[in-house]
Length: 544
Image (cartoon, rainbow, N blue to C red; front, top):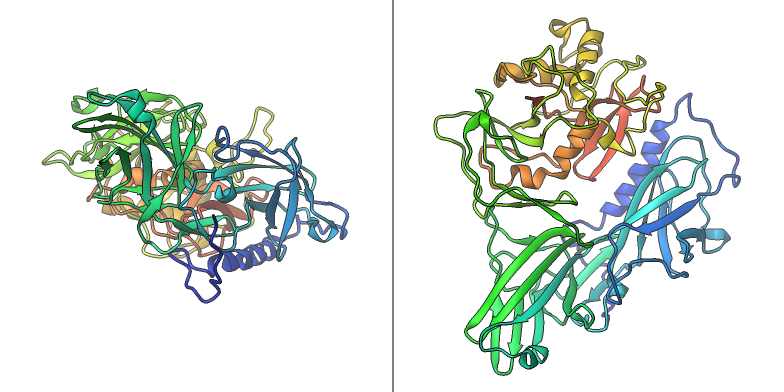
């Protein structure tokens, strides 16, 4: 059952009702500001938006959606064009405008971002009874960048978190008793959604009746992202007995659900109580996992580095608490994150172990002393107290990956292909006329690189067996952003990223002479900006 309420005068919980409007306005303004001599206008009504779509994290069986059956409506927005429109999916994954009034047409040849969501719920929804399935409020969202001359593929992800419960009979409980059990999920029974964004309805605690999949013997329920610290999560009722499970808090002293993540619990019910095995944090589609080790002995440089490890001023590292790494990139951490080694000075946190396959930098001339590095670490603090410029407008430096034929690769839509931050930083230093010519006041001094390479190095010297600090590439900065919670939470020595913008050393592949790329923490995306724009912070990294 759904409850639809008039919420026109209710404040938007957490996110803010103004956010979708502001994002749309910013999209229009960004499109206007991005046009230059390389952008050509297109005839009105000649180049329609072409869309295909898939669900990137499929949900199996009747509970949610795993494929298009045809007739589903998705709501679509196009960067630079005011208003949203409705497209209809067919069973093959192709989308067409609902009617002539709902067709988007490209205005110019510049790239633009397309966002889509389904269902288009602009109301508060009661999710307390999911026994019949949850497809009606299984909010999917997708975003991609493309051009007028290509079909854009949208990979939809789930905005809600999914809870799965499997019951097993233990000592004193029969299979017949287990089949008669009642499972209840606790959490906010109301959700609020707009433009594909989901939040709890009123932050209250309530009961949710889950969907039961008889084939897999799983109880399943969707919940909005929310803080469940210290709160009961699951109740199993068998006869007159109730068994309640309250999750343990994580290293940061909290426990919460995140959108798009799957939280699976296998609960053995005994007459005397319950035993719970949790596998939390993976995406909805089940994936394999890599065991990093439950008990690990660390002895400085003789141990291979891991994501989240502390990196010290003497060039060594120590366990930061990573215990399991899933195939989808999700990480599990020690219940209590280890503290830094006494008497040592932490200067960074490892954010990638080993030499990344998309890093074309040669580290032979650095303190590493060989072509490939052992890993990458991010500084504990920003190098700037405010926004700074990137550098000279109108000069291409070659800070963009290329293929074998020398063609520039799209590091805007696919930032992970660009990990050569050290190589790009060296190109920027050369363009400035040397490290001593870098400065904070002139475009020719490449301020963003100055703050990373010179200013921050004066404050926090780097080890001799490292590269020294440099301005990260867009792939490196994007990785830090994506894993910011795992890297920074529970570690008192580090300051997390601001809800703001962070420069990379990468030039925008399409207009490399004029624009550089940055990561928007507040929007969770990659953007391009003019190099002379004073618009972003700097967070240095190093390789070791």
